[in-house]
Length: 323
Image 1 (cartoon, rainbow, N blue to C red):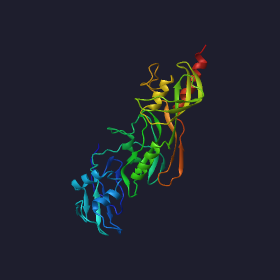
Image 2 (cartoon, rainbow, N blue to C red):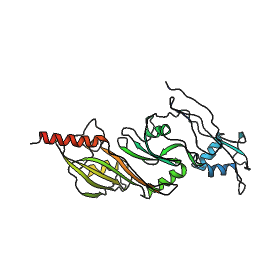
Image 3 (cartoon, helix red, strand yellow):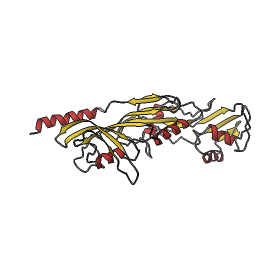
Image 4 (spheres, helix red, strand yellow):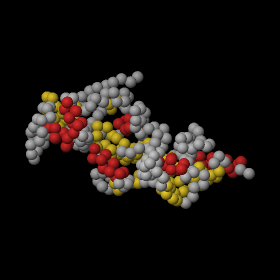
């Protein structure tokens, strides 16, 4: 049985923080608390919150709303946005009410984590986010520690998407600055993602699929890795895919458009859809520049075991029954 648990947590430094009771799977009420340091010039509390708590309030309108809702205290009293700050003033910022936020207790493989970001392995079958309980985003607080950076996000956030049926590597931001930086890297195509898929038919060599999706430019690079005979599809090919744009279902659409739909894709494949095995698509490799250290990072995971098992099964069936 689930139940709500609320408490107030006062922190000594500026940081986004929450406590998890993993048996209850709920976030507790949150406070930000800090003492104002020496200021080089006079500053109103509104401006200070805008600058130093951008991870909590991403816009000035959000800060205005926080003052209106009496979420910000100055020296223990409800603060007015025009009040001046002085060295040693105590500012407390109550977070939005997260009491109704349910944490999804799904254990995730965490390949990398520091104070700014994380890299996790998303299992197939769960959406990254959305108006559902069982999402990867709702599982992040169960798996990741709290950032103590000044611009810490109230909850870790994925910075890109993976389809519900797709497994693989997912980048997570824990601070506002990391979120912005990684987002810009995606926009500038500085982040390299490599997927592996099983597709129907004999796809050899390498090439480029440059086909618009919903009137938007979309580009995918492909490279054949392995081809096996198949009784069901004549041939099955293992391919590496590198999306150069980020359209919804891009890889699935592009493979179907060139006549090689991904095995298990019931949406874009009209013939002989494999049932009960899921989608044979996994994001196996990602390379990016760390948003703070500026060091290059590359992470790679093994293919799901079902890929090799499926190819071996198809090969056995071909050798046994093909005449």
